[in-house]
Image 1 (cartoon, rainbow, N blue to C red):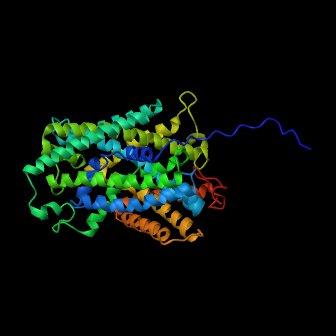
Image 2: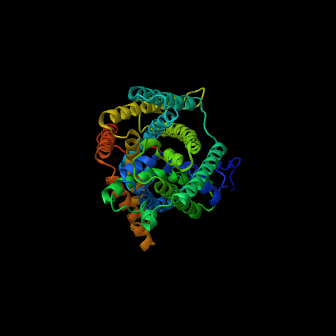
Image 3: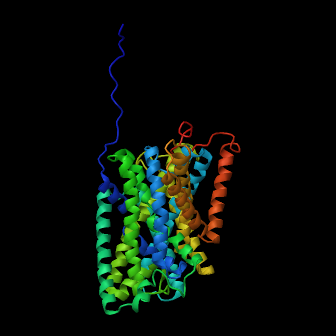
Length: 471
């Protein structure tokens, strides 16, 4: 006999598949920003003894292989969209936990390097403060000002919309066109000396060494950070199995080409790595090419873009801590709390603001005492976490598509292993102190994980993973 099972339950709501390949590519480029190599140009030039183009291209190779792994893992786990989730499901929840712990390092360092760079860029507009003591004090004031600004903006729930980000990206593309035009005009009247001069940005026999270029490449990876955000849109993309992979790879390729053109022209205009201000080196190159107007235009545009990027990174770090607190991977009472009025994880936003302020000031103090570039050191610390996560994604893709898949192909073996190897090489090239600080952070994660799990006798949960997911 038929039974009355009651009224039919409505199907659960699902995200709308509206994003085609071009929309995914634009989204990825907006995340990275087309002027990504400009703020780190000086630091990369110093680290790589002037070989910024070569460093950018090496970073692109690493990111292309890693992008393939991200795209493939997004196909395997379309609802995951993060390195720690892929590693937790494919390798082991404990290793996923440590990958996630490294991502916290990545997320938290992002607003720190942004406030350091913005403070330095603003100082370029204030040459009247010529004494060293005045300059240091004012620089620290601007660090504090922008750390507070990021915190206040995010506490009020102010986010840049996709349309605003799109407008900023269009504006930055105009800046690139202006620079390229000015650079070509300058080089037409001041051509480099023969073929050797044209190839010097790729290889200068006087300064080239594999160790220095590797150091520069380990820093230049920052140019590509953000490409993995495309993988989070799997549920909203048409034909995600094809388009997520293609978009992720094409975003890295387009970014690498744009970045290479920018830094190649910059190196032809200003060979070497001796700049009046290392953190603002690209603006000084623009000034040499076209005069003060382009210096001011590029510097102002990058300040606006970096404020948007830094505040967005600040909010992203707060959200990551919230998702971890919600899953009780870190204390839920503090990190999983939501402000009932603003619906913002206020505790996390304030905590990230305090960390941003304190660590940025510490890095500036180290710069004054040890003469180490604060922005460059912050960048390599950020890349420590990012490259560790990228190695985890490549390893997960190798296990899923080659070792455990019935359809084993040569490409399923070579691509993730190549990505892992290049990322591991760059990771090892970050510098002694970056590795020491990074491993201290991972050791803190191990100690915390051991305490939460009775020395790993209980299951580990991390943001986005559950016991079922990990099976």
